[in-house]
Image (cartoon, rainbow, N blue to C red):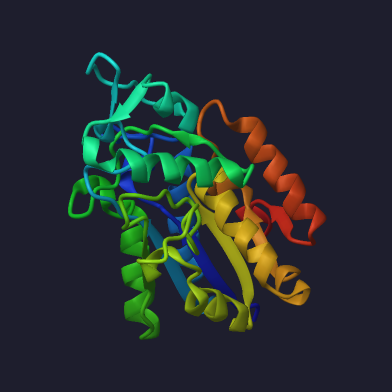
Length: 265
């Protein structure tokens, strides 16, 4: 029997395209419904499950509650804020005491050449409904735990409010004063040690899935990457970032990962 290790990235209510979600991803509810049904039917073949959870305070450097415009008015969701914008006073942190730290952060983020800060709606606040796992998937995981006697590993990410963290493994700009923002080597080692096919699902394809898998591609052996399958019908891009999602899948194929639907498993 083929066995599987399952990595599910941020399958949380706030990313589902359902009423009440703070940052809905079109297609996410159907993605997780498919995954939940598959897991219910294939529990005996799954040897491990890891679920990552975007986990935030209500105020953080990447969310609307952190920022104001020069006149004190709110900054709209999806606004891009650069170090130059802050230096010019176009956008400013609401707490003036953080100004120097924020400028240093944005400068370090932009220096990587990979990303600029996008101001997102407040989402996935710890302790709220939006932080919870999609109900169908949560039920399927509970069924798997009861049937197999194994425990799903849940990994919180994004806990530091002064740095963004898309990847399950590390923050965009790791901080010397917070080990939680640096590479999660135990998680990487656990995925590397798996003997089954590594299935990857979650939200959103264009952001947290892409960033997580890119870190995996940098750290895992080619032999483990060849055992990794990105489930295209269990992940969707943020609207407006479809091109980025497609480019990531092409990159993954080029590194030897399989890209296919759950139906083909």
